Length: 300
Image (cartoon, rainbow, N blue to C red; front, side):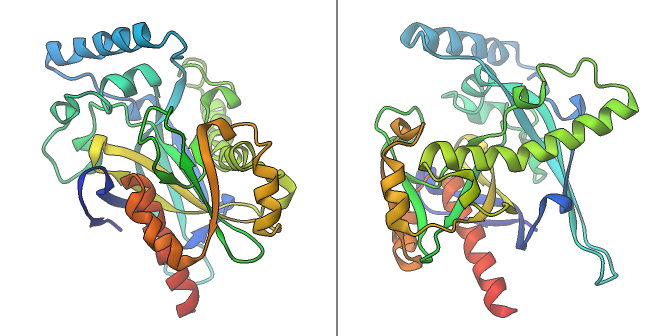
């Protein structure tokens, strides 16, 4: 299920999981457990650097907010022998926060937090690794929506990206692991987190593009890409929009989070191929996942 493709610098990526046929919400579940939280690094100096880096960043920008995020801790993928049974993926998620992300994944010493291993979860056990999300949105006139990031954002300013962000623990009432130990509570919270995976990507598209939620199809999950630089994982979804690209361009100007980007492009597959060379690795991986989906559709 893993594939690694690379190019220079921050463009390098690894596909941690791909399902070109796409998975609906009923085919995706979540196990939310503190077993998938980050393990502190045994090097106390390195561990101490997390708070030092965060404190320095806060001094530079007092608007920084330390919100909680879901941490990527791996997955299980089941494909039954019975062709009538649908494939199913279970995502393993823990809890982390933005402060730890800045102090580990985005640290100048980020490679020092890694453990030499071919197993992704072992390799990244000491990093925050919040699971981001991204959407490949196709308009009714078969154009793909791509944003150009503002020069004011923290990561990869000016680069091309798909709309996206993060699922939010607060949206399902999670601020810690406390209170979810009972079996019935575990089932309930796992179900809520799984639904948040899909709800959050719709929210991100609405907020960043300006398209109304009722113009969007139910997302299908197509895989997880990880940027090699900073080991940054992102879950990708495919969404159809029943509006034409010109209509969306008009809506974009009033999008809630349009300040995060400077321009919206509605592009063909060939144009997207060219733009992918100026995408961060995690989003370049999202493009690779989309190409696998298109290939699977044409093969079938």
